[in-house]
Length: 368
Image 1 (cartoon, rainbow, N blue to C red):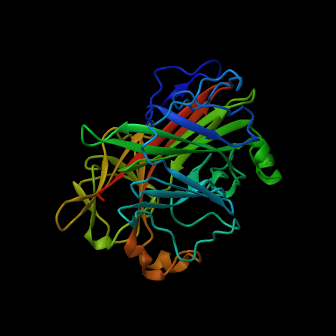
Image 2 (cartoon, rainbow, N blue to C red; image 1 turned 135 degrees about the horizontal axis):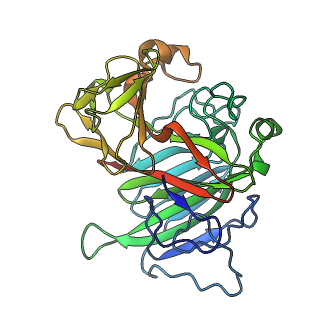
């Protein structure tokens, strides 16, 4: 777990996948969040407010250096780096629906996905909160839909930050761009507020670098009552052929197999092959140890995923019959071109006391 103080200036020992080099920050003009998001100091997850008339000037990133670009259209946010990488986020669910590197798409989105806000988006990186899967009976989340409300709600775009980071070569400087999105109790539908009446604030950060995509969630308890929650980043990775993919880094780890009546097992394979419907929750993993999606042909890494404060990983592929049964999954054969490797905290519950905050995230590196 990673907890931070909910009052006063941000602590300097913050852990997480987001780095804090020199930055420029732009914010939206209004905010419906219960806390004010006016200016970010060193990527603080819950910024304290600052009088804008007295705030320091933004730190420049060099006049000669091309800057990231940002477009906002029809509730879709797209950011691009001068080196060609791009990321697209829908405000509905704050769902990342595209991540391109080297001109190639890294995320899978179903051809039948609903992109009009009528249903959660099938593909990309849907955000699961405050419950994973069907809610348990006799629990505070019992009347919520499967996977909670975060992916079913309209988020607010809070702003972007651009920053410099050391490049791979000593004489090179790479740019990054971070997009922040917010959701609070007051922004939920009446149905969701009645089903989960807790006062909360979420800040979801999506950071694009030249060689990675980072997503981080900060959860804040704004009310007087403690609440429990689970969180998961339901990442759909795009692959050429599921038969040529192996998932590494799971050997000897305990997992719950949801295709076998949620029974517990121990992973015996150093390189997991997907040959049938797969729905496994791997538990108590070291977040710093990468989960690697590799090619079976040459053992080259396709994706490498590290996490912060997220100790569970779900590996999911619907396979043939389930793919056909899902109305928003298509084409039917698309199960061959995707694998979900989902970083989360879902084996138990995080309990957040009044005034406390929690954060966790993932960093995905692509071979391209």
